[in-house]
Figure: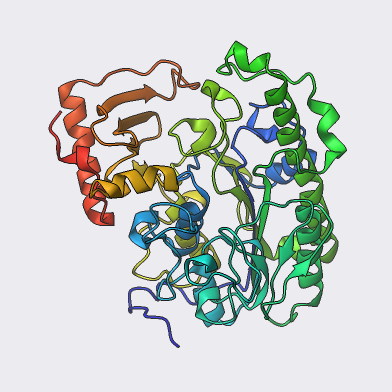
Length: 471
């Protein structure tokens, strides 16, 4: 079926036949890579790759949660435009999933004749337990088998699962509902599968391949233990409270988290070694990134879903053989990845994509294109959703929203339950990088930021209640 591309979409069809390899981890924060100069984590292979690449220091997850970021990454649309107000999950009435009608970078590449592959965590299909009690695929919890067809969005080679956190004993599906079980740390197996794919794919066709590692996502301690002894005496981030620094359970999780990052670095080194040895590094755009971060003790928190930089800022390192190595500070939202990569490949950008292409900025052909971005989070766990719906309310009207610029973060937080007071505050990201000292904007500042929020909310169909309130 042809893609619904307008004449304006066909902005460039004469590409250089470059390949694209997009490698990303789950819950890996921007600070946790050596070249960031923040967490004292050892990532020599990633650092060497970064020296040959463009490091995007201001890449931010629009919605710091797995499925919403992944939807935006692939479609080039704000998560809410795709209907993603929380993860794909079960059991939950109205849980989001990536509709067959959405156009992804995989759809565009496949239509253009690229060989395509997706390996690892997908987490964009409707959880099967929302439809049947005993799926033929054996999927449980939030997991799902995505059968061949439009739900794979153009990715032909498929070795994937929906949502599964058994890192040491993972399973996968290919083209039948039969699970493929592996007794190996999942990133090792998935890297093996990627290298096998690269070795066997048709050499007369360019490829677009995505590799999605689940670690360092919890459970933190289900990990390759090779590097954990490195982090017993690792310095603490300044905004980790003393009580956490004295907590043995936290210390073990911390060691495991950063150990997993170093183990991922080893796997990434296997990939770059293969690309160099085969010459593919000179004909491939290689991206290293993540879907969101992890607080890992900062502000006394684990996980994501909050507005702090440890949860929202992600690594984004782009190697394009035509680009000079550089550090770039442009504000890079989740929905900007697809249009940027399509333009770098010389492929058409569908008119439905809302993100901004930063290709010209990366090529140093123009100034920064994005001045601000609209971030959000909504209560999505069943123990929060059910009480709200019991009062005739939808969770999309709660949570927090933020406008982020290069140096400022403005937040409206309505909490996760009715009648919670709306909090309004902002951070100077340059003067207060650890976000320890929120300030309280003037009425004029509130008015300006709320105006931007209303503009964005209307565009993406966000029913966030406090936006209708005057400061």
